Every structure is written in C-alpha cells, then in structure tokens.
Amino acid sequence: MQKDIHTAICDSYGSFEVPRLSGLHKKYRNQPYLSLVQELGEFGEVQETTDLNDDVAVVLSISSPGSTFGIRLSLIGPFAVVSAAEGVLLNYFKYSGLSWAQPLLELLTSHGVHVIRREELVERVPFGESEVSLYEILFSSDEVDLL
Image (cartoon, rainbow, N blue to C red):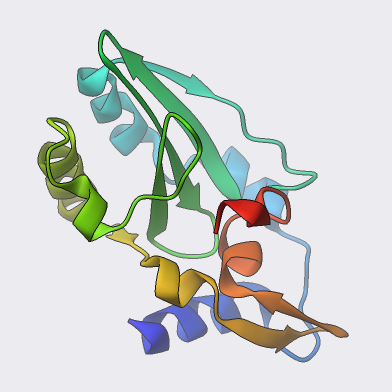
C-alpha cells in the first residue's frame, strides 16, 4: 500500500521535493467520486463539507438514526479515512460491532477505494520545504490532531 500511496502523491503533486499544488480545483469539479457518494446515500443522509482551502479530499458526513460517521475521499488517489461521530479515525479493529462498517468497507472496495490505516497516515515525510504527515498530503491540513 505504501508504494501505491507514494506513486499517487508523485502523480498528483509531481514530486515530494517541489510539489505542484495546482489542479486540485479541477479534480474536485470533475467529481471523481460522484457514483460512490450517491451510493453512500444508502447509509443515511449525506452532507458534503469540503473546504478546498484546507482539504485535498471530498469530506462527507453521513447521518442516520443511531449512527453518524465521516468519510474523507482523497483527491490525490483512491484513498479514504473513516471517522466516528466524535471525529476519531477508525481502523479495522474498531470497525467490529458497528453495523454499517462491513457494508461500507465493501462499498469502498467495490469502487477501488482503499481505507488507509492510522499507522500509514501518521508517517512523516519531507514535502516541499517542510515535513508533514501523509494524512496532510492525502486528506487535509487541518484536523491532524485526529490522528
């Protein structure tokens, strides 16, 4: 998975050393996850809160009676993170016991989207003139404290 992540980053940004930060708005306008977002409606009401000033992902909140969770779908590559209502990132071990978790993972997988593990997200790498986490490169420069 690490190789896929690094390849997607280089494909989108050009390089780690001198990243190109343009093109994000075009990727967003192309709605790469449109059909997936529509299918996520099966889990409950979908609200998008993407802010391209901070996010490099489509940010969704899904609410239904008894459960609320968030999903960030990276615009850099086919990657996602899932968070509980409290904002805490979920990993595969925390999914057990959540009625929506297995069907959600199956839906994401059917669309070729990989849920990234926390251990990968916290990896810090040189990016431009600073060192940042993979979470910041793939999803958002805010809410890093969720890690």
